[in-house]
Length: 378
Image (cartoon, rainbow, N blue to C red; front, side, top):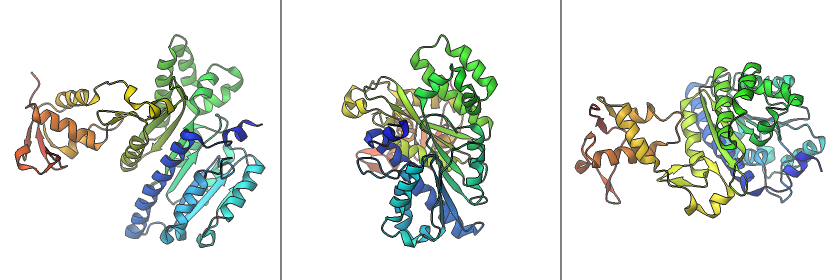
């Protein structure tokens, strides 16, 4: 059995979470793009591209991402008129299966632009898939089984235009092994850059396995940001026993709104949270035993950092959030709770104060326009 075949043998918990994250972001992204299309009329199409699409269904019959995206388009006439879709897989049997599954979808005939399906290795010629999507917003999913065909150049070409976002399924386990394997050095150089791989090899020699995880993802994020990706957001998938990361889903965008939307989606799909702060990870072990998740008390750390970072300033809740949340695991509701804790402890002054704000569940709400005065730190 080929590796790609075994991958689609069963959907499994992790693949379901992965598909949900991509499909939910497609819903939100397409809503934003349709609104922009109605308002500005600068484009008349939007596109979804999957470079490693698979056969359409897992062996257990569960739908993979291409079918989930197309069903969402079929269910929305406005979207069915403007969505262009392109799917690619290197396996001809997968392509034939995907074609048949797509054409059997109920309502397939309502799609104005019939899906284009390719059978090719993803490499330098992958940019041909973006020609018909050029000058229109595009959401791309890149899900290689390992690392072949995955490069910074492809990701850069995907996100170069406005409204173009990307999700990459990053096989941490195989890339971790490949970084010190000279036989796949070209693939590692394509992903991280030659000089960065040299530095990583030297640095990782003495690292523990847990330190390597964070280090590899950090270097991927830096490499992508060097190419113009302003925001990079990873979501980890851990092995069945929860011991270490096997894969990561990495979201790449140049737009802070897309970053916020995906952050909310990934937070809800996390298998655990601590004080309402999501782990941005899915572990079957955590999902089965959530009470065993370690208590790091992240809201206390957030509150302390806000008091220090904004000392001597007066800002609205929204300004605090916008000025701090990037590259943190915190979402908007975490900031409201941390600021509420600072207020109740007398560490900040708010306008309007707590006794003049609406209460929900006995606690005062914390609207985006509430002003917070942070005292100077002595």
